[in-house]
Image (cartoon, rainbow, N blue to C red; front, side, top):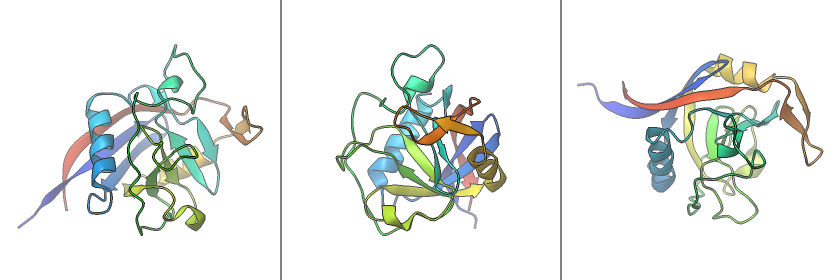
Length: 171
């Protein structure tokens, strides 16, 4: 007997990435991500922060064409409570980006390009890349320049997150 689970297909300008969720450790975070995806919130955004060997970050509404506001500062108009857990931040793990306050995540997420164990139990890991590692690699290797904080992480060319679709997939 085959079972199914919901996964997210992230259609990017560099190809597709498939994410499987961990609702057993971050149920509210998973539901929030799925809701935003189903509402089209992520469609037309971009990966605005890329640090090779660390992570690629997206999900900010300020990265949409014509949007006002600084990329990396937007949210869906609300924050969600952190669900820190024991899942390690390893290559391919998706986790919620946040400001200094633990409960300040909303829509922004990052996918680890390398192991980032210093984030363990301090950021909400909520899933794992199951297809598209080559796309993660391509995005992580995008040329970057310095951003407003002096960090060399702003992609020189837009890396679009065209859509995020939630689909059933056989397990």
